[in-house]
Amino acid sequence: MNDFKIVSKPELIYGVNTSLTAGTVLKKLGCSKIICVYDQGVKSAGLVDKIVKVIEGEGIEVVHFDGVVADPPDTVVDEAGEIGRKEKVNGIVAIGGGSAMDTVKGINILLSNPGSITQYKAGTVYNLSRTPMVMIPTTSGTGSETTTMGVITSSKEHRKTIIHGEGCTANVAILDPALTLGLPPYPTAATGMDVLAHAAESLTIKNNWSEYSAMFAENAIAMVVKYLPIAVADGSNMEARENMMLAATFAGTAFTDASVHMGHGIGHSLGAKFHIPHGVACAIGLPSVMKFVATEESEKVKRVGKAMGLTFKDDATPEEIGQLVADEMFALNTTVGIPTLQALDIGRDSFSDVADLVIQDTTYYNYPVKASKDDIVGALEQAYDRGEN
Ligand SMILES: [Fe+2]
Image (cartoon, rainbow, N blue to C red; front, side, top):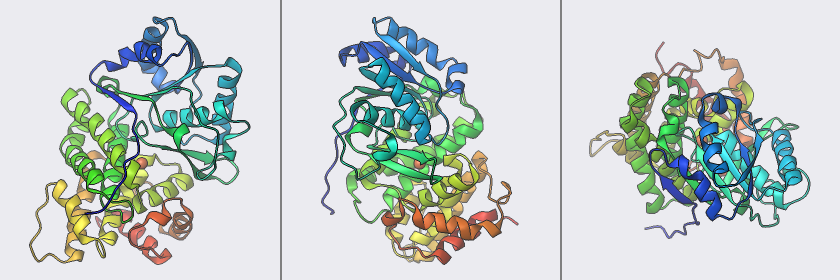
């Protein structure tokens, strides 16, 4: 069995309506003035006001930043960080999905360090960030509440960069499935398939693979397969929402230690070039990635398949294992309404450029099977129409 070391995780508070404990949580952390970070959509869905009310109810002053945008650009993080510095806040709260949570990770670094977030890419040594940070996810997807990294879009280089370390680690994550009840089917599907990608990629990683991460990944996969179609078809189904919230956190725990690979490499690249939602982009790439990885890591891909409920012949070849898992994932994409590249009007003539971006992606060094440009173009070809036409 592989040796492993597990990094520390935030305190997790899970349960329906636990977001209403945010005030007491912040009080316990010693906060008297916080910056609350969210986007207009979360605000208009009515999720911000009731949480702010319980925070103010504890006598804590709230500074608002409602300018979160998808794939948070460095410029927005710098703007929010500057507000936090000027207001001298001593607490940070994210209410939202991955973009809000990645934004507050950037703010956290900026509150303890000078200059712009562009100076603190992964690998940079920065001052320890001690400002208490609380994550309240409103989607079941990113797992960002449990991870030690954030993704910031470089406005100069037009690609995604990673921030990492203590400044990116939340003190407390409040996991309230009730906050996801109003999420429409398409973002539910997109964020849910991101969970599957986190789990399946961390379960098939080569470096940093461990039984600890595998346990979380396998549970997350089984939960997504069972509950995501229900959550997409009936958003008000609390059992499905509860399980998806937990699955997102399990998968986040799995990939914090094991990391993700080529599905996210393709996802980041399609997202950067065509601005399609992160979860959709990863879901499009994942099936053919599993097929590709099975050529050398068939036993791990088989574990993904088993977690999905598949059975395999004892003498199944790596190609058969990869194909079965890919077909099952393509079918799940169809069930939950993830479009094909063809349906998104992303033509084959773009695949060479996308593959170049994949090779430059920060996940590339994690790939369990080294992928050439031709391999990546091949994976995109398979994803183009899922072989449907
Ligand atoms: Fe992801």
